[in-house]
Image (tube, one colour):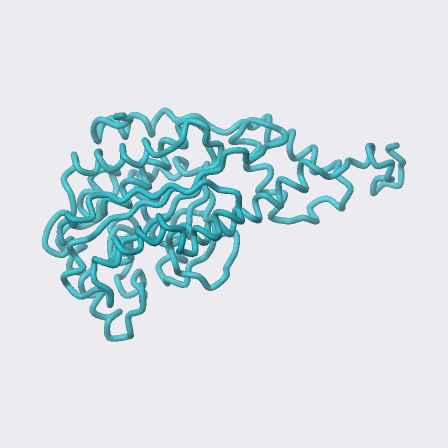
Length: 344
């Protein structure tokens, strides 16, 4: 299905997106104020419940059909030695996902998420971003549509993740191309580079940004110059979710970078339906979270990718919903309020 037809169409969609229900968020806050606990004592769990209430349009939101989408892509820039692993590992990991052997398989089972893995032309790497464009605009639109089309009709909560050797290089270049800064601050070890490898990776990112420049006007152009198919697919899935008011849990550095492409033109509100699940140890993720004006929910020292941090954060989301929906109010429990007046 073609959700997006062109760069102009994507910009048109972004300009007319649904917003969350302020009324349901207020109702959820009022409920939190009446639950048998001191106000604010569940901290971030209360904020998560209110966020979900606003986007699902329910005072008592639920995750009945949570979906985890993992997109896989390969990158031409890997030929420049930016990763200690060859691109064949991407295909091998997809097989591992499909046979249930990866971390994300176990975490989705625990978090109650269905898992969908979408490889995207793994036999055709994108262009080397240090020498030219990664993709044509039409290829970006195709990948975005693949991401949007992977979203189940019944989905009410979405986790997005990725696998792709070399994609932390691409994420660093895209982030720098969107928000500026220095390559040395955006790049990290990825799948295990030593200090010399990280310095070389920064040099390649510098070359890419010197070639393409700052691109802060058009999401499709930004992805075409710097992105990868899996990043474009994540952007498509995130935008399709916003069109349906589905809350989204982003994973780490790569999925956050992919989503941030949608903010080109300083349209940060396009990601109001998204939370960042965890703070990756990839150094660029902290810069990116600040630029996106979002605070990751947890910091577990992770940098695996593949949606793993977002699946773990979903366990906390379920805890937030369990307390929000299941706790008794002061009136229901016959417990006195903070003022000492019985509400029974």
